Structures are given as structure tokens and as C-alpha cells.
Image 1: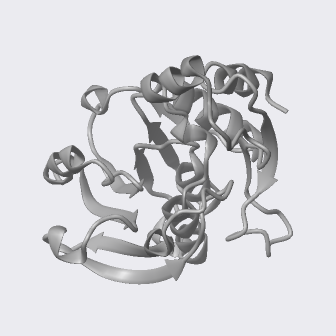
Image 2: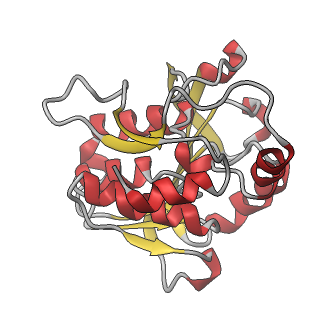
Amino acid sequence: MSKLLQSNIRKTIAAANIVCAALPCTDDSKDPLLLYLLSEDYPKGRLDHDDMMAIINEPAYWAFCWASGQVLARHILAHRQTFVGKSVLDFGAGSGVVAIAAKLAGAQRVIACDIDPHALDACAENAKLNHVDIELLADIDALSGHVDIIIAADVLYDRENFSWIDELKDIAHEIIIADSRVKSDLLKGYKIIDRITASTVPDLDEFKEFSDVRIYRSVI
């Protein structure tokens, strides 16, 4: 168990715990992708005021493996030839699941980018757990040069993030996005290359529509 991530999650939910979990989309492998995630026994009842305010001010997105992250990780590991020897940036990395998958797939350089310092802690700890090396980046504007591929999962829940889509095209020739919360016709210049059903871990009992994950690839 990661003492650092345990300490970080307690800053958001005082009674929460972090556990090591194998991803359901990859656990058919002899060496499943592992992540430190929020335990299934997290408090589900009414939270006190302090916990509620902490969740609002410091949401622990990094403590979940969202459905889109699982699906994109599985897609990456099933299409290793796309990533071998490439430089890859994971935009809005969260737990780091897709960054780690890219490294396991053979990418030469992988950068996990997230504005949440606790998410970068999770990326570092989870990379170590899977015996891979990734770089950490807190600000996309601080990236030096270009990368071959940008990967992103579950970043379009906030419509304000749509402005990033056009800007990312200046950084990489190829962009692959996994999402279940956006209508296909809103992503101009992208085509659907895969569609898989998955559930967030731990299970949040979300609407069924959020388990229908589509993977989009930029059209050059």
C-alpha cells in the first residue's frame, strides 16, 4: 500500500482507504496492470461538512480508474504497434493508467500531464507499481517540443476542456481520446475507432450510458 496516496486520499475523505487493484480490462494477462485505487468500502452514506467541502475543493479523480481509462488502456495494449518507439503524452492523466499502458506497449517516452499534484503522485506511485518509468508534467504549456501521440481519457466531462482539443493538435500529429460523456458529433475532425463497455473502479453505480466508451482518433 502506498503511504503517500493513503495520506493524500485522507485529505479528501477522512475514512477512505487506498488498495492495490488489478484492472478488469487487462487482468486476463499473466501480468495485469495494477493501480492504487480507492477501496470499494469507501463511505457511501451522508458525509459530514468537512468531507463534503474537501471533495468539492480537492476531488480525488486520481483514486478511481474511470471506464474510459480502462478502455483506452486495453486498446493501447491491444495495438502495441502504434506506440512502440513513440513519444506519448497522457493529457489529464489522473491515475496514470493510460500512460502506464503506453509504456508497457513499448513507447520510448511517456509523459503524464495533470494539473492536480495528487494525480501526479498517483501516476508516479502507479508507474513504480508496474515497474515502468514515466515523466511527470504539471503544465501542458511547459512541454518542450512535440510528441508523436497524445492520449486522453475522460477529459471532456467539462465542456471548458473542449478548447484544449484544437490546441493539442499543435503538439502532436495524432490524438487518441476515450470518452463516454460526449456526443460523437461534438468532436469534429475525429473518427470512432473502437467502442467498448466498462465500469469505473471502484463502482460508482453510474448511469448505464457512461459505461459505453468510444475511442476517437484524430483524422489527419
